[in-house]
Image 1 (cartoon, rainbow, N blue to C red):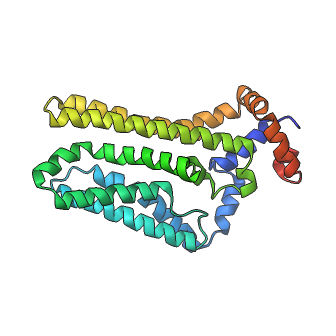
Image 2 (spheres, rainbow, N blue to C red):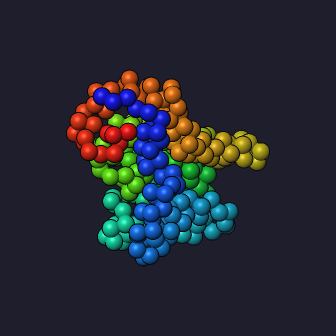
Image 3 (tube, rainbow, N blue to C red):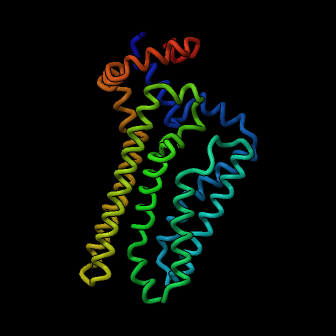
Length: 263
């Protein structure tokens, strides 16, 4: 098997992790305008349920209903985008998680007394991020669908997706988000429990929220920057070549004409 060079790893990771480059720009330019508009809308709508649920509004029923509506709209537009050929996979794990979570919360919001609802709202992030963790775990365990793979499907070919380095990034990224969302749900549960028992303070509540959402920022930083940087380093390349030597040799043998096999 040919040894991996730094340029080989960089080429692989640039494709797999959405880094901007000439190849990506050319691909984007070839997309129809309708696909580009839809992609922009979905990018804006993707996290909108979470944003809406974070708004400090008095009408909590309206808040969760609005978030559920945004989740439903994102889900439907994602399906249309799939039919247009703009994406290779639908429905996505995140869309299903948002839709099911806020759908359940909306039903509870309109069926439970206001006093009971006020005791549930402090645990809102438990539902959201616990739902994420549950969705990622179920999709992985039951359907062999890995969370990070859905972020890469539209940016690499099926052959490139099967490369051992890409598979390694998908595996580690999925594991990290599963653990991270679980930790976020646990922190949110502590914050909620302190709030409804009257043992929380405004300062402590803010600190816990900052810690909770810092985990999300850390996960995204690691998965899209720090870990790719490690993989392209000398130490990371050595790890890949040693850990996946047989897999890389098999991939190159199966795809001898692919540019990655020639690097």
